[in-house]
Amino acid sequence: MKQDASALKQASPVTQRFGYIDAQRGLAALLVIWLHATEVFVQLPTSPAGVLLYELSATINTGRIGVVLFFAISGFVIPSSLRAVGHQTTLDALRVFFIRRVFRLYPACWISVFGAALLGLYLMTPFSLQTVLLNLTMIQSMFGAPDVLGLYWTLRIELIFYVACALLFTLRALHQPRWLVIGMLGGPIVFSILPRAIHWLNPNWFDPGSTGELRNYLYVYGLFISIMFWGALFRCWHDRDRASGAKPFSRTVQTFFILFPLGVCASPLLVWMFYAQLPSAYASKILVLAVPLSLGLGLFILLSTKLQINNRFTTWLGEISYSMYLLHPIVVYTLFVLLRDQRMPWLANAHLSVYLLLSMLGSVAIAAIIYYGVEKPMIRLGRRLSTN
Image (tube, rainbow, N blue to C red):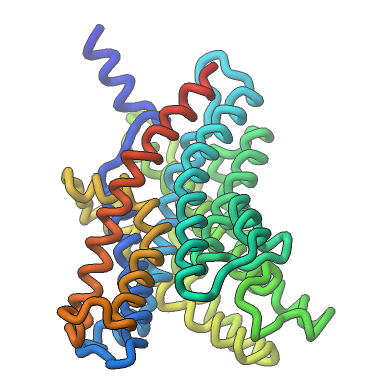
């Protein structure tokens, strides 16, 4: 009986945790920190040695590579966590899903919002109280409020994906490969058509000077959401490949599954070529997506198949990666201000790699504190509340 229970737990798609997926989360967070830290510290009054670290990161856009990894991982994990277990109804499963997601995402996000607000006061660029409060919703751009941290756009994409998953789950289509293919193909179609359609309807819609308005990023959102659906299809393939007697993908689904990474990586170049009349600022934004998309999806495939990294340290980094991602700008900018104002003379003129290492170590330390002090207790609370 004990062996049967153990086998059941191991096979359950809801309870199973993948160490090599956690390792990718940790890597994704470090890649984002690499870009953000180096691009800040090269702005010091005395430019540090080792600028090649920044140039390499900026050239391949390690930050966007990390984001692509995060999105593919979300697709791999999130739909499989939304299932009706036992005698649950669809409504019960949705209630459990959203309660747990809220307690998973919002507490750490709120800490990062207040941390950024305090840092803004110190830097003499304070945010209004209204802006801070709206940022607590994660959908502040819908109300015209700026992000207190620039990375919050990825959280909005996560929320959109959750709603899409909930809708497909309600229609009993979330775990059907053919429906995942439809969701997967919808992103590149939106990415390809929306900029041209909007520009034709209203040439002044895009504002190259704006960095926070939701309308300026709708077409990119579609592309990233399609990566999430591909990650969900990857999970379906993963589970079927390891289940004895499982029905394989149909030939059509298999073809789209294999060709999607190639198509999604080529789409920025194709859109850039055919939509040359778009404002140059957006043409360049579209084009530079090709390299990080290729490297991010390539890394996910490699690290999920042939080169799985699975040890205690990398798994732990993955567990705290959400707080690493949210809080690293606060660590980076705090260190930058201290160096700029000559509060740490012993670190003046250090190599850029020193500042990058300190940023990573500081982010890991802060993330561990937040994870054990806030995230983990809130996750447990969400589980208790969702089962009542």
